[in-house]
Length: 243
Image (cartoon, rainbow, N blue to C red; front, side, top):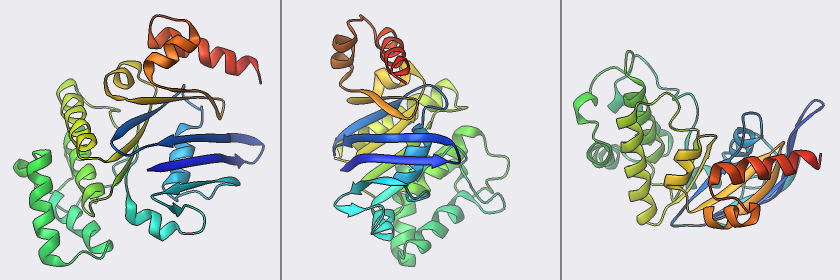
């Protein structure tokens, strides 16, 4: 479980995140939905302990991102915009390297790679160098790398960017399976269809603040609109009008 309480982050004169609070429970997929520049990625980077908040706190499975960042990293798997794969290493070598960084023994790491290869269907290119991989192949390899230490919490920053229809469908099926296994999944997106199909809970962010949060049905009801898209437009319009 991830609990966020009044997180704030400033870059110079720009307030990227302003007092963001929400909860992402286990066994649920929680989406951060907002326009580009709303503060979604900055929020996720703080949760991943890549940025230190200026104010506020977040707790991952009882561990503080401020006081215990190493413990938090043991409990999360992170997939960012850029896959960050080492191009001269094979997919297998990329995954094994991250297993070693997490202190996983060699035999256990090999076994874990085999499990992930079956789960993500990457056997076909597991022993190819990642240079020249398609976007879908890079995503699957990066996702396997983020799951190698069996984290209970998964943080994804716009994971479907650049993917074709089949790759998006495969990712959607995988995230659904992980949710059924009890994982806490948190991802950011500005793609309405993606959020509507996947998310149990949605946190709408506008101009660095939480404009609304709840199920899709609750957001539609709050906005008095028939679709998530209409509700989203109304909710962020209201939030922007308050600034």
